[in-house]
Image 1: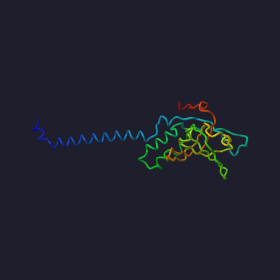
Image 2: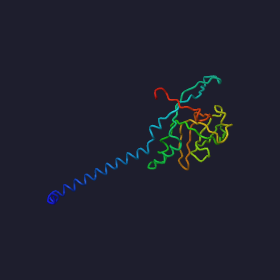
Image 3: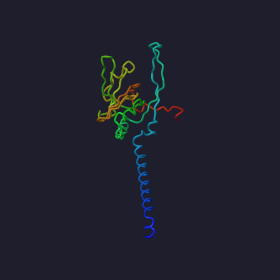
Length: 200
C-alpha cells in the first residue's frame, strides 16, 4: 500500500484536489439556491388575488351614467412581507430592490389616519397597516368625489385600499406609495376574494 502511494502520489493528490473542488462547487450551488428563495417573491402567495368591480365613468356618458369594470389585485405580499423581502435583498441596490414592486396592483386592509387636500384640489390620504400607527405607512391619492367618505371617516377606522404600487421607501417601518383605484369602508369579513373561473 505504501509503495502504491509512493508510486502514484501525484495522481492521488490530483484526484483529491479535484474531489475537493467539486465538493466546494456543489456547496456553493446549494447555498446560492437557498439565497434565491429569500430574494424572490413567494409564487404561492403572490398569486393570491381578489377581483373587484370598480365604477367607471367615461366622458361620453352622462354624469348620472356609470359603468363598471372588473379589476384584479394581489392580496399578497402584505406590506410587512414586502418590506421583509426588500430587507432580504440587501445585496442589491436599494432602487433596484424597491423598483421590482413598482406597478404591482395590490389590495390591503389598513387603518385610516388622515387626509390632506391641496390647492390643486388633489387629496393625499395617510393609512397604516397597524392600528397604533407604528406599522408600514401607506400614502396614496384619493378622488373625494368618488369616495366622499374619505373626508368623514374617523382616524383609526379599518378599511381597504387597492391600487398600483408607485414606489417603496424601506427606511424606518417603511412607506409604500400607491396610485389608488379603490377604497372600501366595510369590515374585513364583508370582503370575500373572488377567484376568476380560469384560475380555479
